Length: 503
Image (cartoon, rainbow, N blue to C red; front, side, top):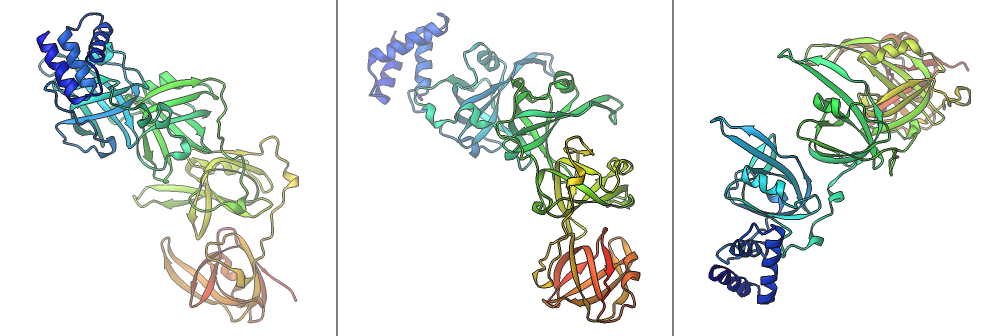
């Protein structure tokens, strides 16, 4: 009892609010938890650690915040709430010895971190009562960077203690507080995600460079007023590829990545855990069902619109910066508030065969970005395009003639209509553009409220070439660019029409 007595004395010296009877009761409780496998002295050491003391009776400083962790720390002590415990697994070391490893995700108010437990420490956690929601203290771990993320490792020197007595539960967010919705994810990195499956994509197979076969599929999760694509690879396809629409999922340790089109998707691999929370669910905060075209601005995600086809362009080829060939087609869509250019990239351009002027097009989960001087709508990998779906009445829709006075022009306006009289004869010249040399006709117009400079490109030049000053023109589906020489610039686009008005 002498060893135990000395430990009790040190505990009482640093925790004077406790009585000897209370400390002895805590020691008995620890021995009972271990089913008698702990000696009295070992249980006393455990109580001391739970009270924030080391074996010598010194205070253990475990106040390091997860958000302050950096790579290369050799003696890390911290406290956090268990968010998830991954199953332990065995492996063979290079010298033939068997090893064991177990990961768990901890969090505090500053962030989350993977804690990797090795060998005996992994067995200790696996056999203990550590569960999600519990608070644990990690002592004498070390940090390193793995795949761009900081992780804490616990080896022979390290210790893990469950629910230390000096840790207040209210100081640590609940487990649900560490999960984000699709609307909350804006950049790359590890994410914990919750959402409802609202769409599934077919499974695709492919061959890797090393000749091995791979599988991939995508689920669309919705929650928090946003949607995001979840990409499943290989074994995860077999595990989750047949999951039903309406299933609420929770993803632990997914990898958010930014695509070339600036959209974000979450990849699920071997290190990601997926939990089914509910079947037959609806998003608590669904995506707003439909938007009007006049409300579209650059940089939007999760765009749902339904509109009528006003004009269709032919698909055209182009060369990307890396030298590869690409293909794009554009369609002018109209609703009762305005119009927008819908871009169809690559294989999407084949859908032109199914379109005609007057058809209804529904774009779900699309995105917008600037292009050709105005906002364009795109479908992308996350989106879906449907032509003439049931439930939409084409005849009840009509485009809006957005006639804008010249004094009201603002940079960034797109697919508008302007009218005015030529102040001068159009000047035609050849200029260099990113797509090579091109012809442009320039002139000024006046509508009585103000003046604007007009640039008409390529095939439309013959519509204005040679028109005398004073001619009244109507320019439909044009775009407004930044001012030049104090005048707003009106530029023709893919769907621009020029009408010479009679007196």
